[in-house]
Image 1 (cartoon, helix red, strand yellow):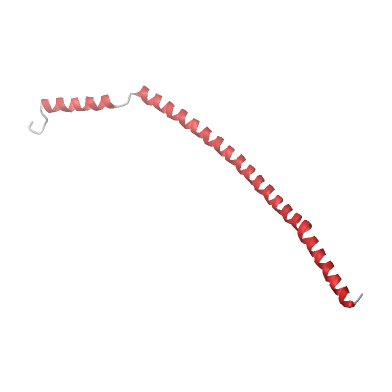
Image 2 (image 1 turned 120 degrees about the horizontal axis):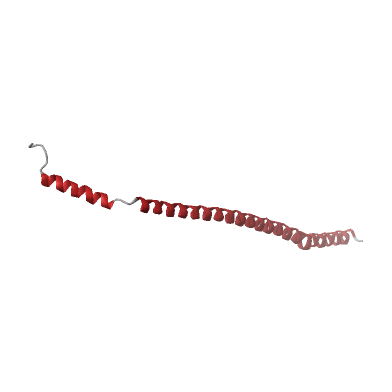
Length: 106
């Protein structure tokens, strides 16, 4: 009998177990909490899907904008060549021809 707990010790242990049980979450609370978590995760998943779709659209728009800017830049270079460099080369060729003709004595 010396190894067995006293009646007071048994009572304290029962009180401890009772306190532990009262601190546990009730099944209805747990179920409600799980439903809330599931609903919230569902909302987050739909938000992520929407953000991915928006990101894809934004990336396509950005690529189209970059392509258009690249095309305009190429057009600007061609315009510069046709409007600036080509006439300058023709004028220089005319001057060279006039100098050459002047040296020939014509």
